[in-house]
Amino acid sequence: MFEIKKPSASNKTIRMPDPLIEKLEKLAAQHDISFNQLVVQCCEYALNNLNDMPDKRK
Image 1: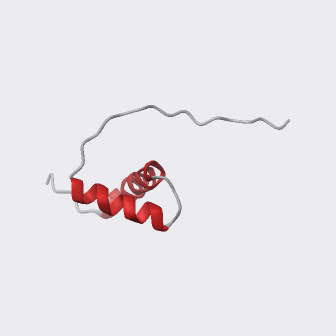
Image 2: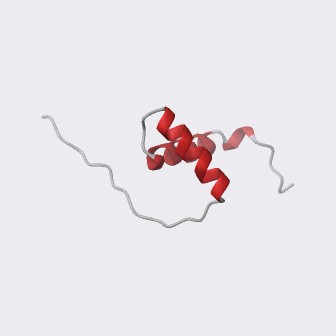
């Protein structure tokens, strides 16, 4: 049976440097996606590739 699923999401306020926000807004506009969608994709990419980074705790 076909089921329509709505992904869950929550609001969270974060602070970013103004120059970073400007770069992200420009990039989002160039690719015709929302600022929020771009930030989510950037965060997901960073987390998915975290294992490629050296562990600095050692």
